[in-house]
Image (cartoon, rainbow, N blue to C red):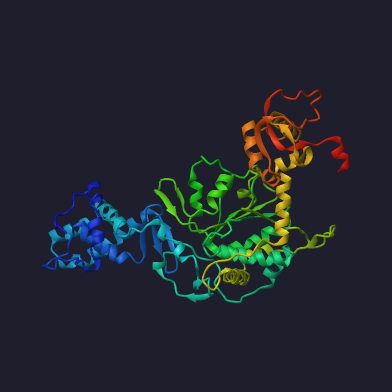
Amino acid sequence: MGSQPIPPGDGAMKLSTDLIRQMDIGSLELRDGDNRLRLDDSPLSAYLAQRLRPRYRYAPGLGWLHYNGRVWRRVPDDRLTTEVQTQFTALFTEEAPHVDGDRRKQIAGLLANHRVRAVKGLLRGLLLEDDSRFDSRDHAHLLNTPNGVVDLRTGELSRHDPDLLLTKITKAAYRPGASHPDWDETLQALPDPEVRTWLQARLGQAITGLPPTDDVLPIWYGDGANGKSTVLAFRFALGSYAGDISERVLTARPSDHPTELTDLKGLRLAVLEELPEGPLSVRRLKAILGTDRMTARRISRDTMTWDPTHTPVVTTNYRPRVVEVDHGTWRRLALVSFPLRYRKPGQPLERDTDRHGSEGLRERIKHGTAQQEAVLAWLVAGAKRVYTETGEQQLPVLPTRVREDTDAWRNDVDLLALFAAEHLVFDPAWAVLSRDLFAEFTRFLEAHGHATWSDQTFTEKLLNHTLAAEHQLTKARVRAKQLSWPRWQKAPEPPAGKAVQVLGVRFRTANDDQEG
């Protein structure tokens, strides 16, 4: 590198760092041939990079990160300013007693703000890491804990390692085989053993950092006081691996700014507790499930692209409204019902599903050390179950209870299925005029208090519905053969020529109602 000093100010920060980064900084000498301290920015920044690299890295989308011996944490920009000042002060303190006055003034110039800014700017390039290397999917099988790094494939524990670039850490230590009566009691909120076993594998897979292989979003559903919030308290054992995400992740319009999606980076468990009423954003749902790459940016930061590591879990007191009727949407949804109602000690048990709860159980799961260690051991055991001998993951199929509850939910919110059940009979010998079918559906929506659809939307959703495939419905412009008419059509006039019809269906009649 040249020995000419870099002019102060912003120009110093614009020095190309590519050449510096290509150098072996371990070979850089901080002193010249006369054993004098080299004061230009290039060797100083390379020297500091060598000293700081074990503890500091810079990523464009994340900013500065510091390693505390267990985990990398984001730190404010001022932290590096202070660090550079501290290092320069140490150099001055070491060198000042051995030089004359003029040289001492030159060395003291290192402490000037513009010199600190210039070197800190160069350090960004020297300590640069790609955003995607932090919490990389390459380390999805690793879980960082206070007492070491767990290999979720085997349950083995190893030492912490800064080069793993892990920014998350559990709150609970890993104690293989740990158990606790409080956690056993908490799981009884799901009385079906098959559901409990499935949930353990499901949540165990979630902490692996790989998206679920089936792209399913579990939605935990039940009225208040049903125990789901106590079960969900397991997330506190996961520390920074689990986080609450904004409801906008699932309910925002597709055109909204994707800032909230950055909350998902590095998370293993993404919790949306108590989903607000309103329709699910299916486009956003598909964007956070079963996608190979995600792109978003934080405010005032560069855009990041990363491999997803998160598994969402949503809880709700009501079954969300899903307008879409396609198979691709519903195959991504699984309703996990919490059927019990917990009563306080002394309150009467009024239903078959009433139980007396344990006072303070949720707080003990959230904050108890032994309870959290039991939770983490249970999760790691679930993770080990989903790994096959080849290292691939295989999730268990949906339990019968979850599948039946999901089907019932779909039947209740699927407006086309409800409309068909109330107003139509599928019959290959019959047809209806397309305009009459749309008019009948519009009357159905208005009668049930729903917003009306356009004719185009109705046709697209109907023909893409599973009912259309099951009963081979088609839409065509043909001559009328055996037309069916809605009941409100008092004096129907068959079309004289060809007309747009939906084939394979007719309107329900009074006789159909009597026959049940």
